[in-house]
Image (cartoon, rainbow, N blue to C red; front, side):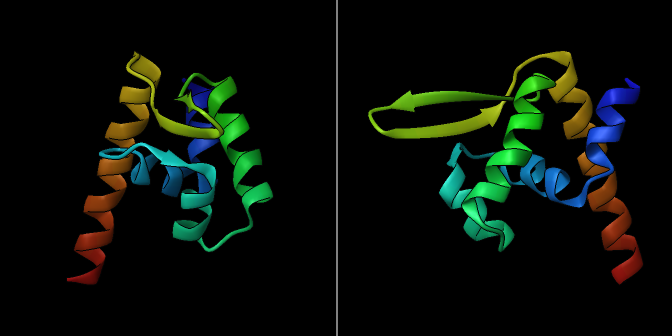
Length: 92
């Protein structure tokens, strides 16, 4: 659990988890959403893959990522929603 929370302490990885909640996206799409380089985004995706938070799926030359359907991904998704609520409360 601590490892998962450490992963979320990085804002970029939290943004990736948020972006993948309802979508499957390629690294290049995520890089555009994040405003980061593709290589930097890929490094964050590697950390998330190793923690079993995201799962890659290949279709030809394109690798798309989605949130894993296990408990680790669910915990991260729930924490991401909590952060969303905090953001909306501080904005209002």
